[in-house]
Length: 471
Ligand code: NAD
Image 1 (tube, protein in one colour):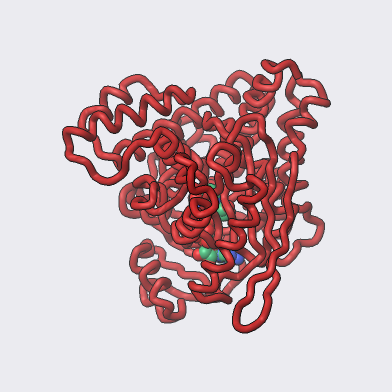
Image 2: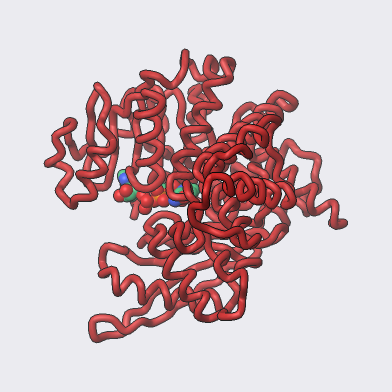
């Protein structure tokens, strides 16, 4: 849990301030803006589970920010820092993210106030199943109403328990497999979902470097090759982003900041070796692939690109003046507070905002959900059947209103396997979303920055929806 920073705003307030900044440039009535901004509902549940001979009470949340499209979508987080303010801020970001990347979901988010490391796997399973029951009985897990996914502290394992519990409660429901995404592949998941958010961060950066004006505006040159990168958090998102950027784009990860300390190596850290070391349970100090320290200021290390991929509000009024990166890409949700955002903007540091940068997860979750509700069968089929299967998935996505760029279909219908298709669909989505943010900024230069343009684009899309139903 991060300590509160003096003179800082809460996470939700921060998101609302950024939203208001974009809304102030729009010709939309204040009342409609308020409708779009507010969180529709937050359910707080307290439930007891008998563990270790005693009853333990847990507090969980599920916020539904906007149901303008259904199902609503958003991860479930396991962390001691979970609170109402946090889930509401995260649910709001989900609404804007889905609108921005053209995924037809409303925004939701959930969390359980728990440190997963305090419990054994068996205990966590019992807690997760009970939490699932509490949410499902109120339709807060439901294939056509509310579809959770993994977030900080949860992954495929928790999603497997959730889907299994949901199916026990809803035996006759053909779509029950679609009640959560981020499931293991053999349980209805889709290839490429685990890596999706980190992969999306990589694609977002690749797209950024295709636009020479943007690269120049960030005082950078060339492409990703050799760029010095600092990453905070080597969990699902940070690890995949760092791995792909270092092994495929030949960027240098010079600093990794984790809970147990900081690893630095000016020649580039071997990310897979570091992750294997962390997974082995050995202390970080014993990692021999870099210099290890315990300093608290590594976010201010000199670098080209800073990737906060752990938690919110880590770049705030206390350290924003000292950040030396030229470009920040927000892999985590809300890592830069609204006050820090202003400081960084004034200092000319460019930010690729969370609502775009980490949208890879929800994009591939969408592919998984469409595959599930269309009853597209799983498992590797013979290559000659792949074409038909990919075509079914693309057709289903298009029927839902998703658009792909020209050339995409002809390239990926011909015998590509599911992972190729998912990666290509994600790449396409990230490119189109970045271009729509740029187009907004080109048409409205007064918006000034990518975040405000992203909010503007998303709010506009949601407003169009409400207008079309007469609001
Ligand atoms: P995770 O639990 O897999 O990883 C988080 C990592 O951050 C862990 O390795 C943890 O040790 C580290 N960490 C926690 N506190 C830290 C601190 N104070 N300093 C340094 N490291 C710290 O979580 P994740 O799924 O990778 O999520 C990370 C962020 O990305 C969150 O903001 C989440 O909301 C966002 N996100 C995740 C997904 C997804 O698909 N998992 C999608 C979109 C956004």
